[in-house]
Image (cartoon, rainbow, N blue to C red; front, side, top):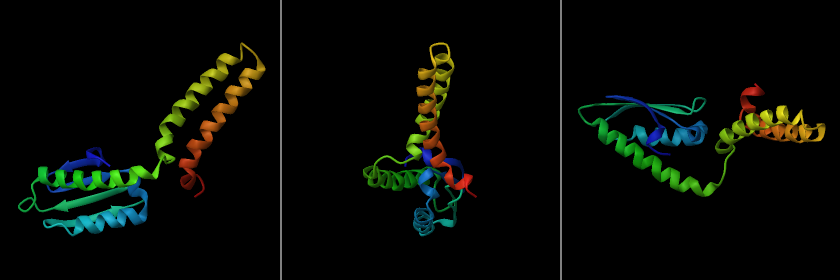
Length: 141
């Protein structure tokens, strides 16, 4: 995670968002660590949204210091988790691009032949399956 995990920040209140915070265990771990910081008045996690809201006392924590501490904490987590390999979420954007490209290919392939059209259709379905695997929890609710 990097500084891009800070979704919004007004002095005294900061919101973090990241797909890794969707894990209830990881979200609770970060909330516990953040709540233990001196100057933090409240830390609330929401694994369903992959976010944490952090409220802090401006007299005890400067906004720039808060951002730096969070950036350091999350960069350590990023380094530790970079060894985990590819996740489905890291493949979601390429899957969307692949679906659009394959869809355009199917339309162009209609003028060439049915076999090429079928190949592009199969590629489109493969990318669609990766995309749907990312959203399986929402789809199956």
